[in-house]
Length: 453
Image 1 (cartoon, rainbow, N blue to C red):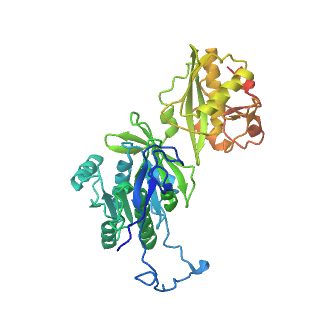
Image 2 (tube, rainbow, N blue to C red):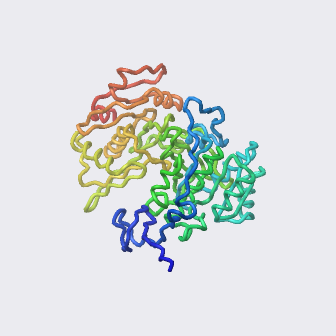
Image 3 (tube, rainbow, N blue to C red):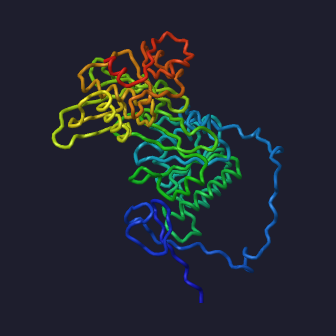
């Protein structure tokens, strides 16, 4: 009698495995995410594959390995290539995650079209659209290249088609729709996602091609599926933005072949995604410089300086005061409010404080602290900040202004956009090698910045 297949319960949110079903996952705390799956069966010893001796694999000497053919594969979309570190490395697997409707499929279809237009054989695989739907979307985006399209979800069939046409790049939209027929679980489960991603990753390394996997995200903003999925791939990109706004931000969360601090910025239009060549100019294009509560910060994302408008509104609260932030860590904002009360002498205990980064951008850079504190003080005192001034610096708990990295490119970007005055940490000014005409004020404490108001 054939023994019954063993089963286990896996969490679709975090990938944890349990012997019994539970309503709530003990590891990640989500409810109703444990699904029954069958354990994969392995051949017993002495049977096919079990007791057979395997041939020894070939061992390479590192100094003899050639890297001449491993030049990066540029997609032709500069913002995407910047985030990838100049382009995608052959043999790598790239996971692109984002909320539904944010533009992941649009970005990948445009990238595939650019690659095909430049003469690279490219395969676009969709498990969510028909070939006719893809064609209509490509026409709307202005894609005229000879792009190979496949609408299938069987990972074996997909790789067989890839073996036939030998593409340099493969786009799979999405990894949650693919499945391995040998697995007993349905598509989208932990074991299927893990197994299919492993197949695609192995194929990419074997054929020195690039595989882009589109992944959905959960309601908490994390890429759906087990965390091991992010470990299987070489690069993890997160596509962010508010669907009600035009800006889209592509962030790199993991990259084995480049920096993880780069960002790419796009504008979503009816004709698809358009690269933003001058992000700072876009963020400041609708600025009202004579209104209290506005200050300009200079953040660094990777190697790119960005000028951001920090806006604040302070009003008389009723009951429990509100602390609402957009684009800035609310815990950091609470610390700045406490410092302004203790060091700056501002009465904010019973007042509502709202803090916002204009344009829908999000950053956790400490150098934005000074501009945020000045914006709150400006809104409280009803005094506008000088229009041609930028603020750079981290604010310590004692009110001291701490130094920041890469001060020279920050100042160069501010001067390029027409600013004439910069307030920076005194330590940065002491060691500064900036050759521009920007008037620079070095400060040591927050109350010195507030006195400029």
